[in-house]
Image (cartoon, rainbow, N blue to C red; front, side, top):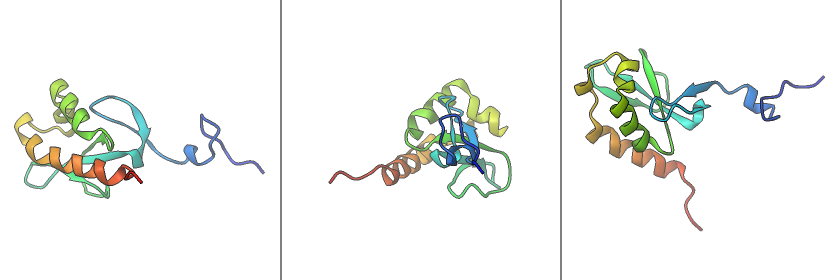
Length: 109
């Protein structure tokens, strides 16, 4: 019995859910993205385990700061989360996204 294959012939690729980055609009597997959610106080926060309740939006994990700027410029993040522009704090999210990208990138030998 053969296993279902994804578009690139990889059997595991067909099982990963695809999400779209609100910044660059690329469709990627969910583990390659980070979820943002409107918190209880109304501020937008990172949801690393992607389990927080509520409306979420995704940014690329490896280029999160660049995608955050693009999403703010196009107002796609506030529109996706249904929050006001001033609920998004790039001074707080930027360092968190940079730190996350550094954790995921392989360290040089």
